[in-house]
Structures are given as structure tokens and as C-alpha cells.
Image (tube, rainbow, N blue to C red; front, side, top):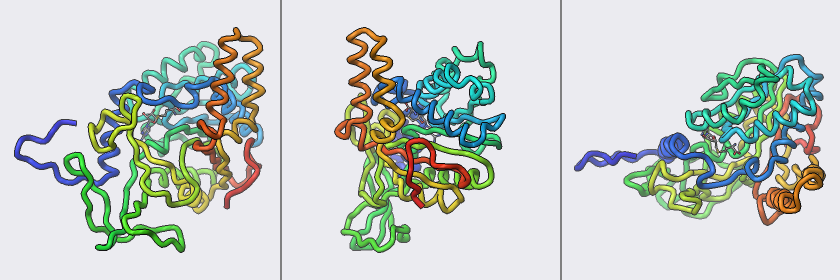
Length: 350
Ligand code: SAH
């Protein structure tokens, strides 16, 4: 980001405004995965299982004759391409009634997504994607939405309970400063240590409320996969990755990927209150195994060279093993209240 002119001090900027600005610049200028790798990029099976999940949910809705398949934050388009490969080859009746909508703010990513989905368009012109910069502009109608590592990129606010009262993190000249603020709303009955950081991701709660309201009136389901917590409070989780290494979040804004853990408890409460049914979370490992991660991996491995088979098995292990991504990443589903438990879930949250 350009430095302010000499002699001029930049005024303090609230953390969420800083994070939004820094990430918009980061995603507009950095090819994805130069600094981190995501589940769909680790194994094609991840997207195939989510494609099968979407097809089963469509069927549980009574196979509506038109349905929107949407993805929020689709990155390089790999997840949607893997979902569509599975859907077009195994469930063509579903492929024929789909329209594809991608919620993506970065023009660089939109280009990558267009290239990833181009191969499907000759046989299924209806899969030509429509881009949005916000979920609000998705058209009405039955919807199935997936989002992998989308919510963690949305800007957060941080509050501290100091001896002088509640204060909020602002950013000035690459460092935090504190600004007095009213008390944030907290999960009931919590007492906090001094200097404990409370995080709030308002755009994530807006997503939960939007989907909740929508699913209350129109059939729909959303699958959210991300790293995060279920406890409501876990302290400071803001982190930065630059050149694939942890970096200081406030330094080199726009050059690092800034993320925070998703507060699934707050997300679920907002969605439930707005009218959705909420399922999970379950861990990513449990979810992917329930959907057939190991079986599909072995099926592919049986047709692959020994070297490719080993790569496929180690990718499945990386996605599901508790000490790898299997426990840190969690999966939550939101559905219309009239729908049955979606595949991979058997417990309602609310
Ligand atoms: N889902 C992908 C990429 C995750 S990275 C994967 O699993 O590989 C986060 C993605 O969300 C990027 O595509 C980024 O450009 C996009 N993004 C970040 N903030 C966004 C916002 N506010 N609205 C829409 N997309 C956003």
C-alpha cells in the first residue's frame, strides 16, 4: 500500500477496514496458492465428494427442475471444476438443470475460474458461470452453496477488556493502537482475563443471516468448510502468510494473506435465528470419511501408477488425519428447515 506523503500521519484505521483493504489488494495481485494450499488443490477427491454431496441434496429437495449451484470464494476454480466433473459424468440430470454462480471479488481469480470451468461448456452450455461480488446478488430460487476457506478471509474486529475498560484494535503505521469502545456482546456467563482478545467477524454473520433468511423461504443448503472453533471465544487468531511462511499481520499489508479462525458458534446462532436449520460442525476428517474419501481414493489408486497411487493416498491422509487438516478444519451445513439431514451430518445444532 502506498505510504502517506512525507509529514502526514495516516489516521488510525479500524482492524476490519485494514484487513479488508489488505486482503483485497492481496487477492487482486497474488496468484492463489503462492502462499498456502487448500483442500481442493491437495486432492481431486475433495471436490468430487462435495459434488456428490450437492447431487444428494438436490435429490433430497425433490429434484427441482432449476437450481443454482453457487460457490463463495472459489479461488482457482478447482473445487467447482471437480464438483462439475463428478456431476456431469455421474448425475447428468442434475448437470442439466444447474446454473453456476461464483461469488468472487478478485478479477485475477475470476479469470482463473473461467479457465477452470471452460472445458464443461461445450457439452453443458448452461454451466457457463455468472460472477457476483456479493452473495446478495444471487438470483432467487433453490440454491446449493459451497464455501471452502472463504469465511476465514473476511475482515474481523478485535476487542480487549483492559483495566481501563473495553478497547478496540485499530491499526496505525503498521502497529496496533487501542481506541475505547462500548462492550461487545459476549457468549453468556463468560468472565474474561484482562487483555483477552475477543474477535467478531461481522461479514461472516451477514452471510449466516442472508442464508438463513433465504433458506427459510426457498429450498436451499450451504456447506461451509473452514478452520475455526466451536467455543465462542479463543482469543487472538489473526494470522498472516507471506511467501508461504507465517508473517506479522500488520506488516507489508497487501503482500500477505490475512485470515482469522471462523467462530462457528456465532455463525450457527445467526443462521438459526434467521430461519435456517444448522448441522454440525463435524470435523473435516469425519465428514470426508463419511462421504467415502478412502473408498474413492482407493478406486483412483487402483487405476494409477504406483507413484500416483502413493500421492493420492498421502493426499487423503493430509485431508483427514487429525494431526494434519482433519481436526483443525470443520464442516457445517445450513439447510431449509423442511430438508432432511444432509449427507455427512446427523445432528442438528439448534
Ligand atoms: N475456496 C478456494 C480459495 C480460498 S482463498 C479454495 O479452497 O482453494 C479465498 C477466496 O475468497 C479467494 O478466491 C478470494 O479472492 C476470495 N475472497 C476473499 N474475500 C472475498 C470477499 N469479500 N468476497 C468474495 N470473495 C472473496
